[in-house]
Every structure is written in C-alpha cells, then in structure tokens.
Image (cartoon, rainbow, N blue to C red; front, side, top):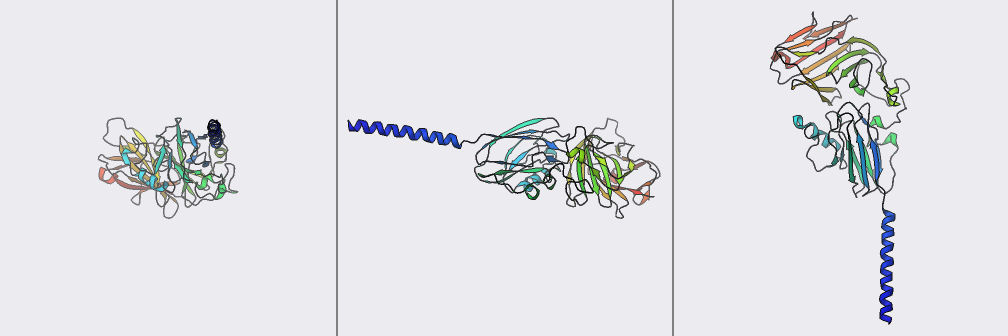
Length: 366
C-alpha cells in the first residue's frame, strides 16, 4: 500500500514539475519582432537601428520605396566594410547575384528589389549578444546605407546622436536642421544627397563640391543636368516626409544641359540604350558614376577645377571601339575647354583611342 501511495505521489510531483516547466517556458517565450523598413532620400534606411532578444524570432518587412535598386543583408558583427568591398568586386555578375557575395559573414539577405518591390526576411536572432549590422550592398550604397541590429537581453542602446554603429545622417531626428545651411548635421564637401529636385527626375543625385559649387546628376538619364554656385539645397520638406516634396536649390544655377545626351556613339546605326549601373564613393569622397551605352561601360567623375571656378567631367570608357561625340550647351558666362583650349562649337568629336580617357572643363568666365 505504501509503495502504491509513494508511486502516486511521485507521479503527481512529476506532473506538477512538467507543468511548471511548461509554464516557465511559456513565460520566457518572447513574441516575434516585426520590423517595417523602407528607404528615405539620401540613401538611408528609415529604421537606423532596432533591438531584439537573443533567439527571438524576427520578421523584417522591407519595401523599396526608392527609385533605385536596393537589397538588405544582415551580417556578423564588424564585417560590414568587408562585405561591401566584396560586393563591389562582383562586377558584371553583381546583379545576377543580387550583389550578395559568397561569405560566411552574411547571415540573412533579401534579393535586389526594384522600386516598389517588397520582401519579408524572417529569421531567428543569434543567441550570442552583439551588434549585427545590416546594409545595402548595391554599388556605392554600402558606405552610407546601413543600420544596426542590437541583440541583447537588456534593451540598452547608446544615445542616438552618439551611436557609432549607424550612419551620421541617421543620428538626428528628421526635423532637426542646421541653423544656416538647413542640413541635419555638419558636412564637409564633397558630399551628396539622393533626392527629388526641380528640373530633374525623382532619380536625382545632388552633389556639393568644394568652392561652393554643386551639380545635379540624373540617374534616369545617366547624365549631368545642371550646375549651380552658392549654398547647396534645402531638404526640409523631404525630411519631414511631405508628399511629392522637392529639394530647393539655395544657390544660383549657372549652367543647364539641354543637348542631351552628353555622349553619343558615332557610326552606330542601332538605337542606343542607356542604363544606369550605380555609383561608388571614391577614397577622396567624390562619386564615380557607372552607366552603359549599348552595354558599353562608361565611368564618369565630376570634380571642381583647381581654381574652384568650374567643374571637370572626367570619363573612362575602357572598351570604346567606335568614335565618340561629346555634346554640351553653349551658355553665356560659361566656357567649355578640352585640353586647355576652348570649344568653339557645341560638339566635340573624339576617335576611339582619344575617347577612352578624356576630360572636359566647364569654367565660369564672368
């Protein structure tokens, strides 16, 4: 009898313990983390950082609200620059691979998303605490377009304005502006914004150069649109999220390109197709634009002239095999130079050997 009672007591204790463990397990279970992420002007994720518990289920609902292509990679701590550089080396294979290089440092990733496309990225957060970067590796984006996933048991993040793990342009609230220049943080030229600006398509890239010179590059046309002198742009309406908002130019436009395209291939009878392939930030912080004419790769960089009274457009076309024509718009107060000599017409014809590497200067002459 005692044996039966003892067994009954033990059985009850086991049931109670199992039930207790089940209750504890349910108590410790953390709800899944839902993150809605989009893209802001100026190559920014709208969520610069977020916190999750170790082992928590995470769902990132990423929508590309930009007109340029983007992806999203979640990486091991401290590997962002390495992965960005590996993605840049993919070259012609990049788009087919969604600019995702082979690396064990990549934990999860989306494919390349075109404007308006969405993808849901679901995973279980690492059990090891740490700061896991996420980044867009489309060429030219990874050095400025990234964020941080904080994995820790306690949600204790550094002050946003002093967080070293997010881009500087994301460390201020959207409505915060510089007192005089209408920027959310102090910048040293050259620097740039992806924005919507009057006189260009929504795929505009505005770049501010030393010497109070600025230019607008239109990615939809793969070409220069206009130049201005003075202050840069007022992005206040864009930062506040106003619908169809446009940036305002604060300086004076002194040149507008009306003879588009700037480059045309001579002796080519077929329709020339232009395709923007992206841009990268060079070591000196200037942008190098990459685009194609009928799959012919062209690389262009725009800098200020040494005297800061104009700009220099430098072209590299390594595989050019046909003659080339450069077009520009004659404008009062601006003179165009090639090899130190002023152009007397609005066109410049170059042989295939001359056109592989050349530069043209636009100088303010008043």
